[in-house]
Image (cartoon, rainbow, N blue to C red; front, top):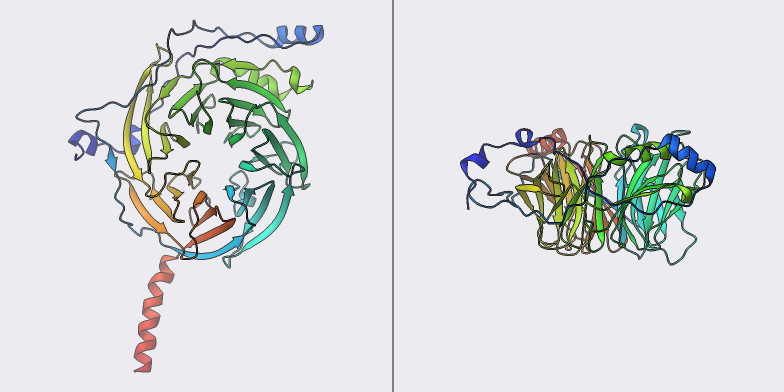
Length: 449
C-alpha cells in the first residue's frame, strides 16, 4: 500500500520528539546485609524513592494500524551516494568473530577498533594503506570462555582507554589497554552476557544484557552493580541487546528473544547511581535495587529482536525477519507500562534470518551498516525519508555470515566481522579520485592514438 499523504509529509526532524517517561512501578527487594556503620551511612545519604503502586497487568503495546499508519519502506536499489571499495582483510583465527567496534570515546583513537573472538579480545589500528596494525591482545585465563560482546570506556584516573568484554562464562572483564592487563572482573549475571553498552556521557556506567532475562547497570570503576532490571514486567527470555538514550541519562532500551523491545527508566533510583561513584566498601554490600516494570513494552516484531539503538527519541530495532524498523515510542505518562507505538520506516536486509547479527552506525548516526548470512553488508542512510540504500558491499572471497559491523566515526571505513574468523574492510572511494580515473584513462587513450 502506498504511504498516505499524511505520512509522506512527515520527516525525521518533525517526528523526533522526547518520549515521555512517566513514573515506573517496581517492587522492593530485601535489603542487603550491612554493618551498623554502613546502615547509618545509608540512612544519611540515601533517601528511598517514592514507588507508585504496581500495575495490575503487564501488556505489550502493538503498533497502530490503519489509514495514516503505513510504513515507509526503503528500496533495495543502491544510490551510490557514497561508494566503497573492498580494501583488505585480516584472518584472526578459526573461531567466529562475534563483536567488533571502533573507539568513539577519545578523538586520539578514532582509528582504533577491537574484536572479540573465542577467549581473546584484540585491538587494532586501521592503517592508511588499507591494512591493519595489531596493537595488543588480551587472552582470558578461562580457555572455555567465548566473548560475545565488547564496549569501550575511559579510565577516569589517567583518561586512558578501557575495554569491557563478556560472553559465555557470565563474567564482565574490564581490560586496561594502557597497561595491557585485566583491571577488574564484575560478577553477578546468572547466564551468558549477550551485549554491553557504555553510557555516552557518563563513561563509568555500563549496562549488560544477559541470558538470565535481566539487564544490569554497573559502575565499572567501583565494581558496583547498581540496578537490576528484571521481574514481573521484565523480559521472559534471553535479553540480546541494550542501548542508553543519547540525551536522557535515565532512560534506556532493551530487546530480546521474547520478541519485545522495552524502555526502562532509572530516574526514581538515580540516588543509587550517584552513590555508586563514591562507594569504597565491598561491591557486594552495595544496596542494589530491582526494577521490575518498564516504562513501555512494545511488540513491534513477531520474532527475536537481536539489536536496538536509539536515534534521537526514536528507536531502531532489528529482528530475524530480514528487516530493521524505525519507530516512535509513546509512553502514557499517567499509566505506567501503557502507551502506543508508531512504526515509521522499514530498512530491508535480505538473507538476514540468523539471530545475533547486529547493525552499527557512525558517530552521528547518518549511516547504518548490517551484514547478512551471504557475507554482504547493506549500508543505509538512516535519517532520510524514505530510507536510502547507499551501497551493498561484498567481496567474492567473503562467503560466511557477517555477524557484526563497525562503522568509523565519519562513515568512511566499514568493517565486517565474519563467522570464518576474518575481518573484512571497505573504504570510501574519494569522489575526486573516482572522477579523475576516467579522465586519466581517456587522456592515455588519446596519447596512444
